[in-house]
Image 1 (cartoon, rainbow, N blue to C red):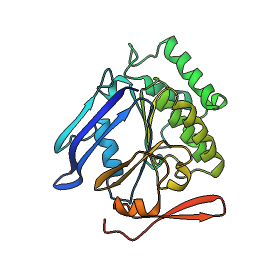
Image 2: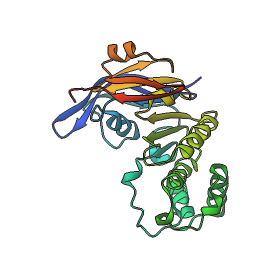
Image 3: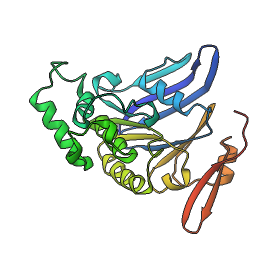
Image 4: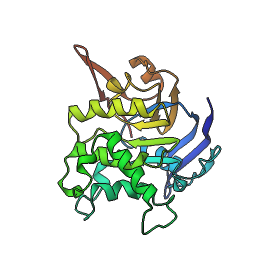
Amino acid sequence: MSKIVEIQSVFAGYNDEVILKDVSFDIFDDDFIGVIGPNGGGKTTLLNVILGLIKPIKGTVKFCDDLSSVRNNRIGYLPQQNKIDKQFPITVKDVVLSGLIYSSRILIKHSKFDKQKAEETLQRIGICDLKNIPIGELSGGQMQKVLLARAIVSSPRLLILDEPITFVDNQFEGELYEILNELNKEMAIIMVTHDVGTISSYVKTIACVNRSLHYHRSNIISEEQLASYNCPIKLITHGEVPHTVLKKHNH
């Protein structure tokens, strides 16, 4: 088990507001980490720090081996779907090919290898039949599969997902978790979600983020532990199907 990212005493935020305070944890090559916490608690800020989209105010983010930047395609990223412009005139295959833009020798015209890699990734995710469809015609679940294909087409060592089950149906949710289980055999995964009840069946560890970060080195977590981590989430179970809701919190 090799360490691929080392985060030490990181403070981060925007303008004059500090969102994350004194965050430290390591990411290893077989990790599957579920990141939970209230809105405004710093989950997306944490992802932005790892992705290099914002610089820490204090502290360090150290990438090991060849994982020095998202730009060398060793980090895959699936953003929140509401940040994607579905009116942009581009096909499914072109979206997936855009995941190879930094590794391609010719930035404007993709190589035969790039196109073959995109085809293989579309087949792996099960959406090869959609490759020539404009993204504006896709359902929410189909769009997430396309964005996931783009995120993994370069065979990254780390895959980062920001609330990937938002705006999708239950069928896609189940399919996504099964795909992620297979991908975790090849890459580390960090996934932000509010649904700790469901992800506890899939992730290996849980990071509770509410300004600070508490790293729970198990996928089994109790309501008492969440409270001790200052993570205002209440576990609710209906029969055998667990759900979660946020308690009242100050952020």
